[in-house]
View 1 (cartoon, helix red, strand yellow):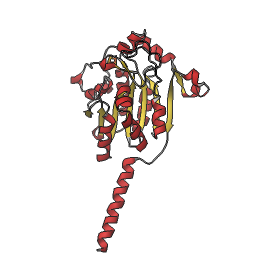
View 2 (cartoon, helix red, strand yellow):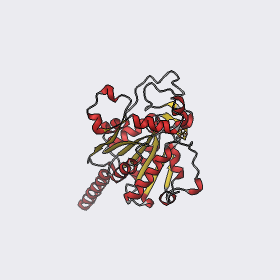
View 3 (cartoon, protein in one colour):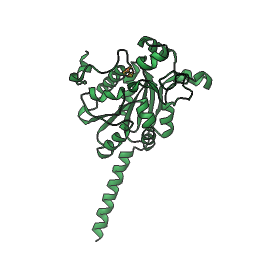
Amino acid sequence: MNKIYEDYYRMDKLPTIWCPGCGNGIVLNGFIEAFKNSGLDRKNTVIVSGIGCSSRSALYLDFDTIHTTHGRAIAFATGIKQSRPELNVVVLTGDGDCSAIGGNHLIHAARRNIDLTVICYNNSTYGMTNGQYSPTTPTGSITATSMYGFMESPFDLCKLVEAAGATYVARTTTYLAKMIPILVKNALLKKGFSFVDVIAQCPTYFGRRNKMSAPADMMKWIRDNSVNKKQAESMSEQELAGKFVVGEFVNREKPELTAEYTKLIERLKEKAGADLAKV
Ligand code: SF4
């Protein structure tokens, strides 16, 4: 294994439980490369994950990590950041974990603009529990709970967190693996709520049911259905249906929650000191 990865993995926890050809390893290696390039201190960084195949990532990383309950990774991360604002807090999560049971935590963390970096391994399914549909499953897909084709419309998680108030929002795919460290590094260094959506493959459950059981077939499907942000601007809503728009969508400045909270505490301390002086 490449030395850069060896330094960041708990080698005694390998091999991973992930199926051959799963996209999770590509996302996790992308995160490691981004973290190394960011210059951030591992000793001041906490990795938080929820439940699901991708959330096993926290177990494999040689950081301070916390593997929490289903859907609550962002809630735990919020508590860590509020109590220790000086820490870098990163959430590694899946589409089911962060946008179904954890959907409200996602929306409100973006609205509050708390300084978290959330990386979503978005494989459109609940891989760990045999492939039920998730909020990002493409319409028409066959899953364990939509044997005749998924009838609903999927969430566009980037649009969702942008509308909720996130300061950094971007999407890439495991096919465009070289973009992962670039976008994740930007997200890590951004002060505020940052979200990177990485479209990934689950060949075992999603792929197998949708005539793409070979990992390479899933990668081709991701490649053929990806359009960059520039191309997407000239496409109609109908043309964009079922496509993964990739690129950086939001990079803006806004007051960050824990910094504002710290300022409030300082103001109240000063006021209390002034009031005491009057007594
Ligand atoms: Fe990856 Fe799917 Fe296997 Fe889970 S079930 S490890 S998401 S390929």
